[in-house]
Length: 272
Length: 352
Image 1 (tube, each protein chain N blue to C red):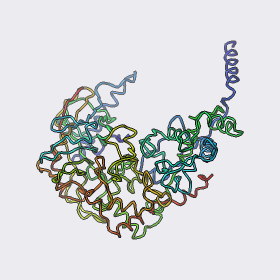
Image 2 (tube, each protein chain N blue to C red):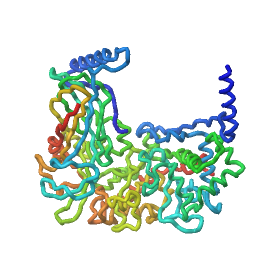
Image 3 (cartoon, rainbow over the protein chains, first blue to last red):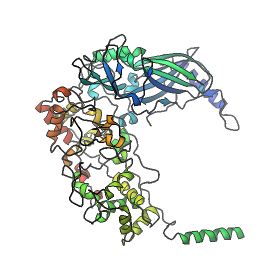
Image 4 (cartoon, chains in turn orange, purple):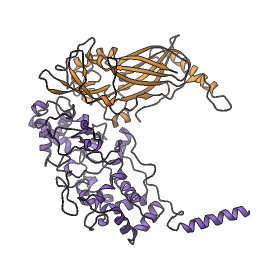
């Protein structure tokens, strides 16, 4: 178990009144829906399931495809994938009237071991049309918390590198300029300068992913697609010969990763 | 009323017919005493629902662990290769069984086993639970070289064991499954969390400058970068409990995990051992090839051997590794030794 389930958190960090309203709305609907004498939950509320799929420019990728040199990045480097796991957190559903429902949750998607590829926050929401977004990694507030399950997975970032957690561990090998196999560790963290006792943070590198508007009519399964190739593509053409290992203390690399990550995720199928 | 009498009679007859079953005695629960450091930082230990910890089960497991009755000729016990003074490992590269034949693997130290969340045990991950792990060495021809039928007979005819099994499992009918359940219960009590570094983490002591420098080497990605596989202060297990090829060989005489899974991509991968109690567990690596921590660190610094399955976390393989300075190496060793826990190896509860 790596998923944490909480009730709604700091809904809409910019508008507390909307937060309260949303909470009340959800609570009211919850009471109404639970008033049935037979104990059956009313169909006015639904659970949302997020299904995480992965592809390389459209070709599906799963753990059985790992450890084989079969992907060529935008720079022309042939590579293999050996480890891929990442955190998503703070799923936000925004109504047409700009009310935010925030799921204060996180999920460690572990493609290597095919764990947590499907994630259903145990929170009921009213049916309706929502703009759906989430955070890749953790925002800075959440990144400072202590997560026992992520500690158990050794997903931590050392304190001298700012502490908190990896946003993503993506390890593999590529054929380098000398035509030799070489490892790479595309590890995304909160960008940090001056590693040591007093690290500084040049800019945020977690990513807000906006999936767009989804009309939720029944318990939906929302596919979240990661195009792995995008990490190497846009706007920074990634040359693994230049950036392969020891990237955690390299704030330039971290910022480039965050920039490239802006278009990595997209909405796939929605079934309900 | 008549029906009730019939039911009672049937129940009495049932009890009489199962004279080895003890429905009156209930083993006393003995949940693991989870250390604060673990409680605050990592998720709960794995305790099988069909083998809860009990006072009687742990006591029986301890007796079995130290008893040579499990071996064919009565000369060796589990503890022969898993000695408390060696953090339940031994001090030879590989271990000899009852026939004096040495195996191919270093005896793994035993502690904090209930926190092995993946429940793959042994260097190669062959055993899929602690209970199952204890089955194999009894019959292994280069270990205890016994067979379970004989062991069960010896236990069943022993003057004490049937009663101890009755107290632990409510039956005096001994089986290999109950035997390994008891051993696993004892092994789960082998908890080590009182090293100098643990006390530092709890704010109870300070580290020397050299130990702190060593921690820095351990955690820095541009130096040791040990933490990706061996934990960190927030994961006080000091292992990820998974399998890596750490660059020991270019070709493999021992396939490790690959020999279990059959997947060539797993060849040469072995479990990351915990870095706790290194002061007591030399020699090191799955085959005990390194006698000292200096040799181990030299390996990662300058001695890496390339192979198709070497872990991508291994760095600068073309020049042999991370190229630590002599000072970095000395500091790193000082830190590593702060993870050793003398109270663990001297714990009276763990002695024969």
